[in-house]
Image (tube, rainbow, N blue to C red; front, side, top):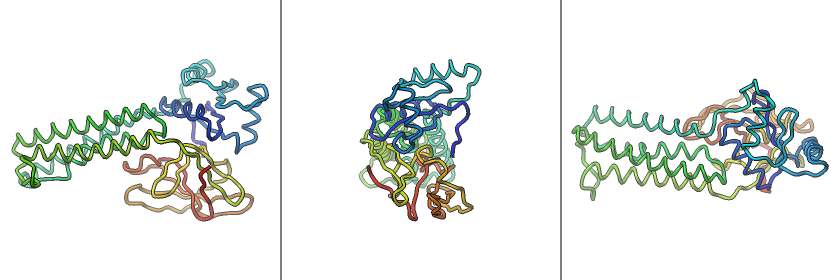
Length: 314
């Protein structure tokens, strides 16, 4: 499951630690590729923390090459990475802010589809088009936020305004080009007003959902096979009642890829793992979406469990 590049930035943390949550969110937003170890689930990680701190278990502790930083800032981690590996630019991954470009891209796709439909049948009012156009950007922005990500909440708000602005400009342009000649819903004076109201309502809904995800209080969840805890994290995404854990939160050696796959119409193709704990095998007891569809960006690369694996709130 360790797909990060070398050199690795290792974050030693424990559930319920607000300083750990803040640093992990900051490193995620900054695009720093990390491998995370829960010291409550990994005794060797706890021993490394005690060695770095002189005997106590102060977290977060970040290990970069031969250097250990106790409760550092994101800037300190960046500086240590540059000093420890001056000739290797590989320890960072694509920053989370790339969702802005993705949102703009999907907005452009929906806009193009609306224009083509209007050219094809200008006498048809494509009522759903402005709603989809306005919602694309804030929805994508909301997929990439973590709980407690206040900066992410700001990005979602701006994305919602951008979606509504693009929708209004598109509706006005199409109307002036005489490409929106279809009927409007009762109560609307013209097609531009209808597009703004529908688009604004859809964008507001997407923004509220995104804000809920960004501002809610983090909850630590864990996955168990009998009395053995195999995963724990306070960065769990809940979708359709299933808890999706970061891959780094799963205990090493527990998952073995299987040949099973399945397809969800809105999440994409899932790949499965056999869960093995103390000689007990649970075939296809876990799954992941390595390349999910746009509506399910939040679960990309995460691990969910079923079939004998119990997920609990701690």
